[in-house]
Amino acid sequence: MAGSTHTVTNQAPPLTQYDVFAADRALTEAVERHLDPAVLDEGLSELSALGRTSGAAQVQDWGVLANENPPRLRSHDRYGHRIDEVDFHPAWHRLLGKGVSAGLTGAWARPGGHVRRAAAFVMWTQVEAGNCCPLSMTHAAVPALRADPALAAEWEPRLASPVYDWGLRSVHEKAGVLFGMGMTEKQGGSDVRANTTSARPLAEDGAYELTGHKWFCSAPMSDAFLVLAQAPGGLTCFLVPRVLADGSRNVFLIQRLKDKLGNRSNASAEVEFAGTWARRVGDEGRGVHTIIGMVAATRLDCVLGSAGLMRQAVAQAVHHCTYREAFGGKLVDKPLMRNVLADLALESEAATTLALRLAAAYDDGGEQERALLRIAVPTAKYWVTKRCAPVVVEAAECLGGNGYVEESGMPRLVRESPLNSVWEGAGNVQALDVLRALRREPGALDAYLREVGRARGADHRLDGAIRGLLTELADLEGVEGRARRLVERLALVLQGSLLVRYAPPQVADAFCAARLGGDGGASFGTLPHTLDLAAVVERARPDS
Image 1 (cartoon, rainbow, N blue to C red):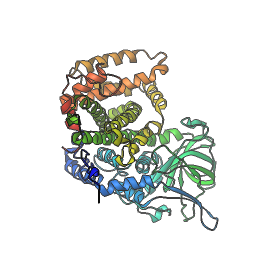
Image 2: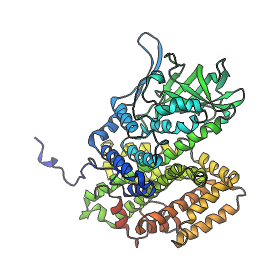
Image 3: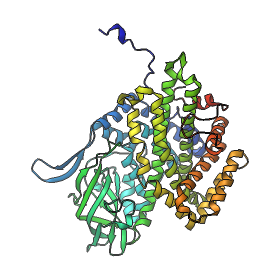
Image 4: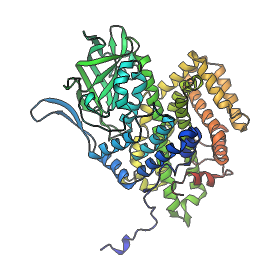
């Protein structure tokens, strides 16, 4: 029998058994805005179903179990034969099965596919971010494979399949496959042109033998990988299957699994190639050009993933403060806490709105939209992923000591929050990529300025920020040393423009005041007190 002192009062109920999609106004409005009316009803129905799945207690438990029981490497079987397999908890397979069936690998060939998938990715990240890594790479492999129509015809239908068919078998025996990617090496990091893995041509047309290593190779139990290696004609892209056409295992030696800060459910490995069979994708010497479409797509997924982590952190914080009482009233009604929550909600909504706008550009596919993506994707990747960690940490603090306890779920979000800033090129890589676009592709800047210009005249702080940005862009002498500052301004102006056009006035006003007008401090909770912060917080509440 519980003691009389153990009566539980003043604790928030779990945030569970709710529709994650319907509860996210910024996300639902973005989908309604960007989806073609012809597929809107279908898209909303499918996303609402995934929203209810994402909020279900059982599915949330799978996320916990997948992280509490991380993958385990089995290099050899009981007889001493090398097998190079990774075992996962059943919860991992259940999550991947749900993600695949929800269309997270099937965006390229269906109407509005990228917007629908982007919204789903934001939601599914909130359940468990680790399984989103193979889902992301599988989705992103499509544009690279299309450099070789024969390879695309063989693999793409299985990449887009709604069937999760796990286990290492020949692709011809599988209803669905997952893809990974391997570019990073010990000596090179993001400098992939320093890669030393070699590719020796074989007698079979397009076939090569690889010798070398990859320092980071996530999801090593995927069915195939796109990797970079040095062929006689230069750095080249290759497809490396785990199982060959005759059913035998390819040489894919898993040396060890990384012991990571977060993302613990997902296996990231160091792998060795030693006489490994590979098929060339694209022309020799065009490896970066071939794989760049995959890189761009995974970078957008980093933005989506960070938006999802921020949304879940803010939802938990607002939910907690809605129920928790202190000093004679609800925390959410305390002016200072309301300021903190509103500031966090602004960052979350700005990230979601920007991410879905970029997904819509993928769906459009026109020249203008492609030019916008060239500058906006690395800009968003730089800024949104960097904002994720401080947002999540501040949100955890809103729960006080409860937020420091594993059972709250907040520590897992905190550990995950820096990942997307590091994956697919850290901050400096993104900033330099933006500079490259500015110097070499004038159409990209024109597309960006046309996009932000659509909101000109609607807010004087946004207008001032655009003028200041144009001044900075007019002088690119010695720009590398101030590249981060420039890219930050590009991101904030783009977010401000989108919010002024699409968000409620209270949200746009607060964002422009604090992020563009200079009326905000270095920490969260420093918004001008004259703003309608209650409306901003109420919009972010997940259970209203």
